[in-house]
Image (cartoon, rainbow, N blue to C red; front, side, top):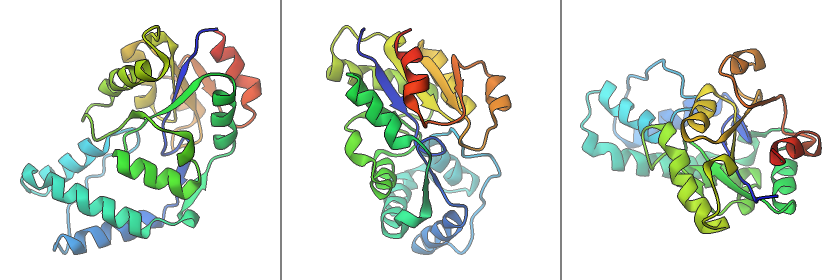
Length: 226
């Protein structure tokens, strides 16, 4: 069997941040930026990249995009200071699934809308950061559809030049995860652990639909052997 590169989304897939945490983080972020209030668009953040989210936040508040690096820096500081283990829900089977992949001779990586530093902050609090050394992150492109190509180049460094897009398996909980996998010719695995139901995700025609990452020995072999 050719080695596969299994790429995990983070938010809603491996972990979720409890609902009460983000308002406090946003309040502290605004305080440190010297703003009493801000316009927060009602567009869902699910499946979007941090670069896209923060760029649009600046635009909607009439702020110059040159402030992006400062906003990012403060956000990462606040996230690191405020996020604790009990703010996170680690989804059933997350660790077991990653461990099954790596002990079966495959490589695990990340494909996430998070900035790389934010991704590893969240994974650190969940005790999952030691599983990952590489991936594609939301600071690298606005458009999530371009992240699989970034991951592909890193996967070739990890596995070798024989890696093909069809050897990459992207596991995520949103339609954007499915879409970016299809865009680059990867295998899409949708998991209904986030804000989208299985019925909603199935409408986007993932290659595989699962309800949980638990019991990977029951669902992963079929994907890995195809």
